[in-house]
Image 1 (cartoon, rainbow, N blue to C red):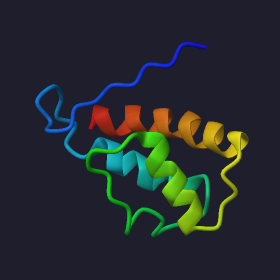
Image 2: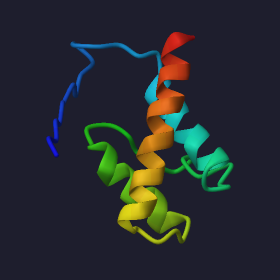
Image 3: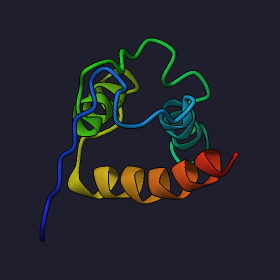
Image 4: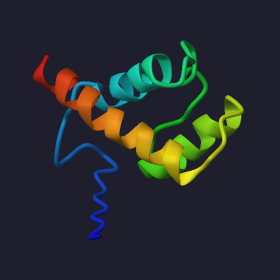
Amino acid sequence: MIRLVLFDIDGTLIASGGAGVEAFAAVARATFGCPEGVARLDFAGRTDRSIVREFFAGNRIPATEENFQRFFDDYVFWLDHFLAE
């Protein structure tokens, strides 16, 4: 497996119009049944995995590799959807 980690801390490389946060919220609602699951999360300057770990902890979801995989599989789907908007 190849892992690529990209950082764009100040938004100089891309501007997504909030699509990433919207995608996180959609996964929280649709996949994990947490309608307010991202309300207290700080997204700035963090990796997605770190944010998901905090989301899991705050919503008492086991931080298993299976749950990470579910989250990111669905996140990619929703991110594509929101980027298209």
